[in-house]
Image 1 (cartoon, rainbow, N blue to C red):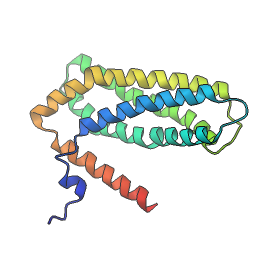
Image 2 (image 1 turned 180 degrees about the vertical axis):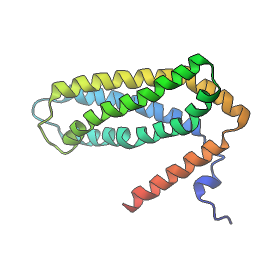
Image 3 (image 1 turned 45 degrees about the horizontal axis):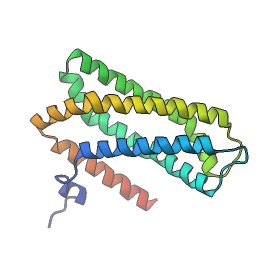
Image 4 (image 1 turned 60 degrees about the vertical axis):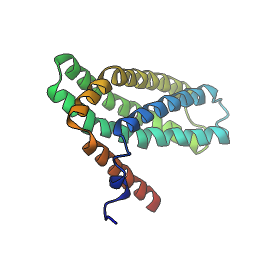
Length: 184
């Protein structure tokens, strides 16, 4: 028996890039849900289904997406920025800037989603819809650049050096956050 946490013991089964790809798929799904929610809201406020959906969307973009960006900035971007050609290094710089813009845009949308989730009717629907449109476009373009350029190059580079340290660290951090959520 080992004292190592389960996430470390199973880190050989945890694949960081699979987790990143899965997060992209979930983000695209949540963006669709966000657009549907924004389009479907009327002046009368949100019904129970809309409130539940707003809660799920808020959780994804406030927690999961931030964790995802942290993973990329710790494990994917630095090796590429250090060894990449100028075009790849520029793409990495753009993606880091995108993370800041995504966070800024989300900080504007999050209070609106929180209000919807809590059944409040003060939300400016035009501002919500415009914000959702901008946020969705930025996220989609960001994911497309990562998946078409950055992830393939990062995978190729990590296959040469091994990505077990990345897998282990990501698994440990996820386990720690899960334990924190369970406690409080």
